Image (cartoon, rainbow, N blue to C red; front, side, top):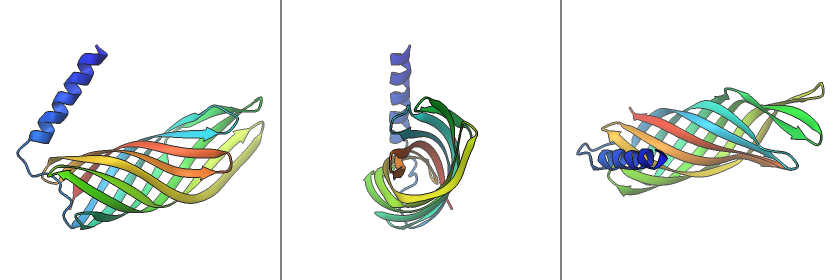
Amino acid sequence: MLNALAIAALGALALVAAAPARAQEARPGPYGGISVSQFSYQQSGSASASLTGIGGVLGTVVNPHFAIEVRAGLGLDDDQITVGASPANVELGSYFSGLLKGILPLAPRFGIYGVAGGTIGKFAAESNGLYVNKWESDFTYGAGAEIGFAPNMSLGLEWLRMFEGSGYRLDAVSLAFSFRF
């Protein structure tokens, strides 16, 4: 069943890529979008936490190989990890990012990209009655791929290292829909 689903998904992707519409190319102009993310919080000495979030992006393509983006998002849930012998609830409250995006168009409707910039986010953790709620900031980097499926719309898949500190890191895998204005 899983193999049939994978073959069907690849076939659908091939049909979308072969569609005659000239979809979202990396031409100058503004765009916006929404994403759903699966965050992985890893702390040394404990299991990883899995968090879900939703975000938005506003950006502008400066030229076919370069864009500038601002992003904002919210965590939708929390997860529990074990720190030492104690359980701890972990939550991502909100985040804001400013990113530079290098674009490598591989076809009229498909390209890969890398992003780098900065993110500030609010984390909360609770363990044994101790509650920590603080803002963190860090260098952010990642990579993704984007495929156009209509004249002004595209879907993207991205991996992002949002935070990495002393003994912890937060990564995100996101599925994004974007629209050219």
